[in-house]
Length: 255
Image (cartoon, rainbow, N blue to C red):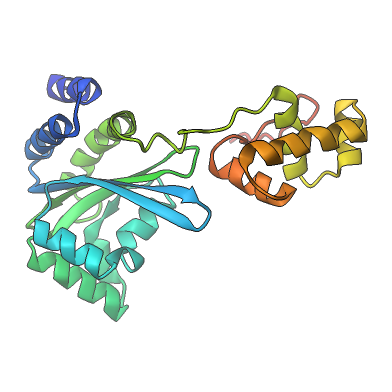
């Protein structure tokens, strides 16, 4: 890896404030030959509530228009990057015949955001981040220019995501995250698998009453009213994640 990107990554990691990070990212996108950058993360505060955090040197008029007109609802870049890891070049916007998408692309171009590359990152707590570099020219998918820039975007994005989490309150929904005991986690995980309290008791070699006791504690700690809501909130907060039992033989595919 070239020394300049190593230096940029080190500076991102060492950033002590957002303005310092922003200056570093401006130098990064300049080095790649782009005119603007934006990093945005959307953090689910609840199943029906989303918070956005943005650091950018995009034109302020465009950012205001984007927010005021709620372009995130029609932006194919957002839809792609919150679902896939594969980078997205903006020339693909024109592939969509939807009039709203074409109008959105035209509006962006009117602010000098003609072409660009975007890439997403996904945290375990549902925090979806998107990093984009934009230019006044078209950037073609699979072109030499795009393929040369993508490795640098891929290399720096995890460090940007971690830095922004560190410098803000948006720390992967970890603020005031309740602590569950090991047994409470086990009971909740098996409950998420659809097991009844009696079945969980058999799996864990404890009584049904003990399972019910642990799940009641979970509900209280999470501040919810029932088991289903506890499962949903714990998943949202990253408290429970896929766990693979030693007794469960994995499916393995060799090619």
